[in-house]
Amino acid sequence: MSWDPIEASTIDEIRERDVDPLQALAAGETPAIILRRAYTANDCAELVGRFLERQLMRDPALPMKEGDRRRIDIGTSLGNRGADQEAFLAHAETTRELFSDLFEGFPNPVDVVYEALQQVAGDRRQVQTAFEPDGRAYGPAIFRIHYDGHAYPPHIDHVTLREKRFNYAVSRFEHQFAGILCVQNAASDSTTQGVLHQCLWTEQVQPHIRGHTFHDYATQQNIGHCQVDLQPGDLYFFNTRNIHEVPAVEGDDPRIVLAVFIGFNEHERDIYVWA
Ligand SMILES: O=C(O)CCC(=O)C(=O)O
Ligand SMILES: [Fe+2]
Image (cartoon, protein in one colour):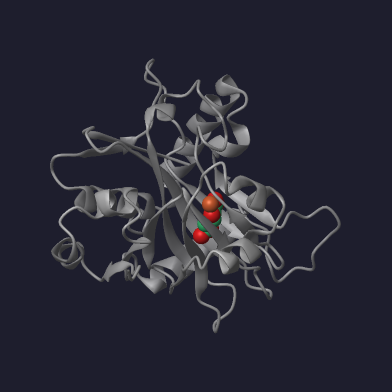
């Protein structure tokens, strides 16, 4: 069976290809939903300028110093900060403040991602930032800036299956997706953003993730994959229970994405979004 992304430059076309693309992602029937040109390349470039102006990222033109990080986050990551729920929710508040004026003069890229997801999801579902029962919200989205040498080896992302967090409202979602808006590629001729393997995580696969032998396992088992190539402004969604990876960034230009995680249950109206 071929395993191809549902890809178009309008949501209408995407929904013509599949009546319920999120359900197709949940079922593993498609590797990704790719929306081309969700944001303009020009706005992407100017946004990077804004990050530099506001010193939210390290200027790649300056020499790297001892202790400089290969990845900088602008936003609040549940994966990184979720161990302390109070601190996580307080940090999320500062992200919402930061984002309240960061995009002045541009279309708000976080809204672009949420609106695209809402349209893909359809009227019977409601996309919203994740929140706890007391009303406190998570960070809405995160910019990740990856410098030379940064890679994501084969892995999954899942609040319960991987992170084993059960004390968050998002732990009720069976399916977790990611939404990634490409803001800047590492080099002009390298457009690979992600490699998605046609393999949903199970306990049986875990030793190959832990032992860094997934590629050998995939070859042995004839597991196919889908390579997603993006230009700045392209947005894609995928099921984060599919083993996935991002090849190492090469060169002086950092790879920059705007990322969200998405919680989805087939029979639930609410879709929660966080970072
Ligand atoms: O940056 C990406 O395209 C995806 C990164 C990823 O897999 C993750 O953050 O878990
Ligand atoms: Fe991931």
